[in-house]
Length: 341
Ligand code: AMP
Image (cartoon, rainbow, N blue to C red):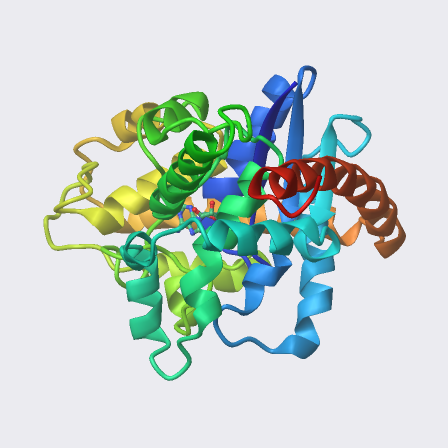
């Protein structure tokens, strides 16, 4: 059975960028494919402290992350849907070490996200931050996952995972790992034209990042809905004076049109046509602000209705499954590299 897999780190409160780029794609793929595919939605909690966080909050944030998956629409009663924590499946870290030894330093050094993040956190650049794409490769290869719904920022890491898998297959055994589909195929599988990148509300040339310290740049999933609406009203736009979808010259307006379409489950082209040629940025902002406010209120209500006991039961089931699959693959890799008979 094919495996579709994704995860959202639990380091900070996720944003609507995470919701639209990862949760929403995964949930619609789950609706489409859960009858004949494994849907693995994990919390990459070991990835959470590649940059500094408040560790006292991490555990609760992870549990909340699971509630978010459920609130976003994952059907926890479907036997093919598996929710688990990376830290509770030790094979992830063990495989990461083995993959480290088959990843040329130069190749890992080309990851642009490492360059960006090490500039952002210049006083706390750790080996973990450098190494995390290889742990991500282990997250994927352990389960023979073919499709990985991701935002655009992660495609370079996906390519790295493919390269590592191909390299090991060539060296040891052509059937060792299933190689995840390349970027174009992933995007097609997600029914997108290209990878999605929701932009910062303050600087729309950059992505909306959950680790940004500027609260006005992002809409977090736990934002007060009315406050979030105000952030949309003060989003940076441009001085062109006409509503057009043009990510190069009008990234702020294009970002608002994208948010409006995706949160309402509408085709982006239809939303662009609705607003084409209109000149009031205020009207567009008001509409998007209403959409965001309504979305957050509804989502937060769903999250509040999920109990910790429910989460515990879901994780117990998911982690039993994940450990079985991951340990089988790890043993196969250990045999290939010669540490197990
Ligand atoms: P991270 O925040 O790095 O844990 O990312 C989790 C998932 O959310 C990944 O699939 C990212 O590609 C996706 N993601 C994060 N930020 C955005 C964004 N601004 N727009 C679209 N997808 C995003």
